[in-house]
Image (tube, rainbow, N blue to C red; front, side, top):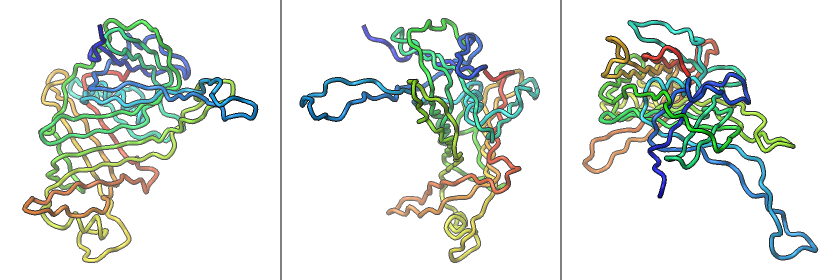
Length: 336
């Protein structure tokens, strides 16, 4: 008899002490519904080189250092997404929630601290195949996207220092059963002007250094984020050449290439149709105050209408201004 993947579960909980699995992960953490994904070991056999005096066959092999990494793909729900945002960005409201018509608002900006939050993770694989406890889990990457006629979907890239197998599965975790978000309730503005976008994407990469193996240990000694990248993209049906000129020439009024770029605010606003508490709908808002569009080419082909896939980079010329601000309104009073 096989094991059903759909019967698995993943539960996230903020870690109180680095290096120590939170004992209340199963009861106080948030169980996140997933489309697919699991963490996988990064480990290889250490094979010695041929030796003079030895035989033609490999005599032995050892196992070296190990870490775990992988992607979870999901439909975005606000309570579990807030946990991922806390890990990927760092929380700035210090868990002091602000009531908004019976809901709670959590505001995130990318942390400039040397370390981002660690999480404990319970991962059950299938319907009884295996249950793992992961310690010191970090959110390395976060991707969100939605099409006009689709759901808001995401991918989170995780790295974990340690894993212990054979654990007891939490029988009744706190599932995030909140409403999902769809493209018909998502708007995008650039430089204060509504963009009739057909789809959008948002990407954050913390570029964690995950190769700090040390003598006397199988495990990574440190997980430290390096250069941060914040990017976004959207697809438009071309109405005029202003956006193309801005991306390629630098400003929309130019008729030949210049060296400077136009930087303007990009704001993506998303709302749930269902109430998250009382009479309040949930929402997710992504603000990139200084966003510049990459040069791109028109995709003219035959009799097709010209649509263009635009991508761009969030910048931070003023250190006092965060490169991004993400605001979540949900019915959750705390973030796991």
